[in-house]
Amino acid sequence: MAIHVKDWAFDPFTSTLADLVPVSSHLHYALPSVMTALWDNALLFGGTEAAPQFGGYIEGALEAEELALAKL
Image (cartoon, rainbow, N blue to C red; front, side, top):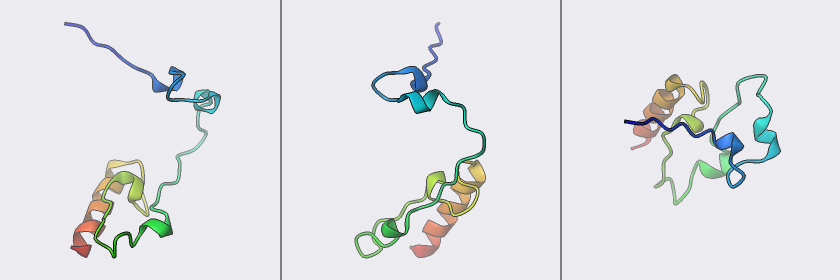
């Protein structure tokens, strides 16, 4: 059995030099306003990146999913 770990920040095809700089704070995630009513509100996003609060955390994923479900 083998375990392989891939650090995408060091892959020249998926990263830039900026990816090697550690972040100093948590990034702000949220769904851009131009993406909130796509296809006449038929397309919904429910991942942590779409959360208005707590983006990037499991709480953000739960929050975004609850908001998407409320629109159904």
